[in-house]
Length: 293
Image 1 (cartoon, rainbow, N blue to C red):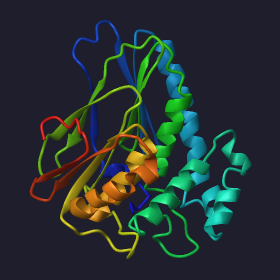
Image 2: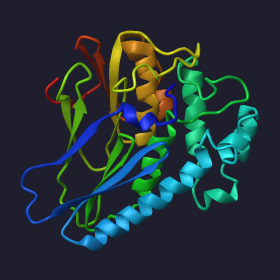
Image 3: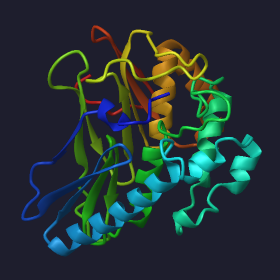
């Protein structure tokens, strides 16, 4: 599991507009939230769409930060932590602080990943009666923001701590966003992905902060030769949670886990994964579009 405090800093992702954007502008607005940096990039000729998209995403991130913050004793997550799993799932989302946000899918996915991974992903990795969704909540927030984002007539790229998703408005350009995955063993990018409408990308890595990803089965920092794992699929929440799980499991056990459990977890959703090992060796799962690997 990732330590949730400042956990967004483990990933460095660069989003670059494809060449030939014409007269459309790309505006990026960012702000601190959920222990990391959130950002919205909007590709549009109208400043109105920049402001509208950013306003929606900001409000969603602040709502979910108040609800899902493991370090805030007054958050809904902290209030639910001492309960058993069934009680948590029956009570989550009933706090008035959530406004209209449905957070149950985030809790459900976290517990489902825990059971199917044998505890490698574990929202209780800190111990019994604790709860930490830091390894999946940011991706969940991206999905919620992408669904509610007012990006009509504009393309948007939503980024919360490196968990990113591409959104296209009714009049959008249909151009993908080019996203670079940092090489954990040196400068530059290890791979580049063109994110299409609705696609999401998340990476778990040891960039800058050293070992801060924990094996939910032991509570100890992971030390298995994995430098980073990047997951590409149509859900930022699942990309976030799976990237952590696959980092803990490593490529051999991780590929078997995906073969055995992926359909149970996400149904028919296509999922690709890229492991980068210490020393630079790469392992791929799925019909990946990681260019340059």
